[in-house]
View 1 (cartoon, one colour):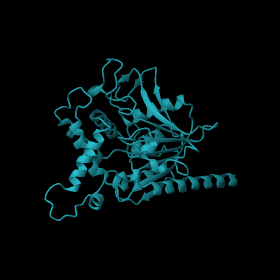
View 2 (cartoon, helix red, strand yellow):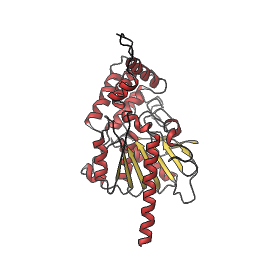
View 3 (cartoon, rainbow, N blue to C red):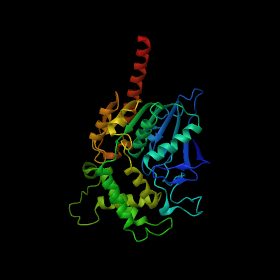
View 4 (cartoon, rainbow, N blue to C red):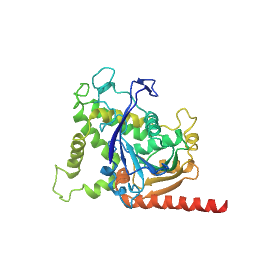
Length: 350
């Protein structure tokens, strides 16, 4: 693995009109780019993940897996606003010389993609063999596939959508309200809003899982309990767990970025935008996802030209995109294999 930081020496303008004097992106690469630069896989991480793909997608990473660094040059960028190396709310604003905190610039999903394009050009990448991302990562992937239709040969958007739903925005807004209710939130220090973020994470877990998941793994067998329930302990644990590795500022601003996702903005309609995608596409969905329900992925597959659709059976809800490794590997393998066969057949017919 190679960890690197990309910094621009020229201004970067956001959709909001705000101009940044510099742009800082941390990214990890795995494997080696071949001489033709035709073996690039670009991975997009979700809300609180990072650029170290094996850490959170270990079941897809390694020899004989889809993300095989022995075959591919794999790159993942830590999205701006996060706290894992890219410019974020706790980093220093080069204009003021102090941390951004509440003054962190508002990145849209489209801003993020336009930042990645600068890095891509610097690396001399003209073609990406495969783009893959779930949830917020899938939103970035779709945005880029619309922005630069000739770039991706294959894309696999997973448990994601063409426009962040009112349901998803409501969950994010509720989490931000939890942070705002923390009496420390308005202060300028790294731990401001932390107790609120713990509650926000507990709220988020309700959308990442589902009734079946909690019944299966968090039910109490003791019929005499009247307090100290397993599911309550689990909710508190998840908040504490996130607080050990994240901060409320990044959580707050990234959730706002997610809410901006709308492929149809300044492109007439969402359908018009999806029909711009030229990459061979496999849309993956989860049977029990209540945050990004199956209907959203069916919509993608219906409006991206010749897109395939695969339903992954999972009891884990939305978080199944991080856990159903065997099904995901097998689905993407079949997809890429079929596309190879199709290419051979086309050459024979010509």
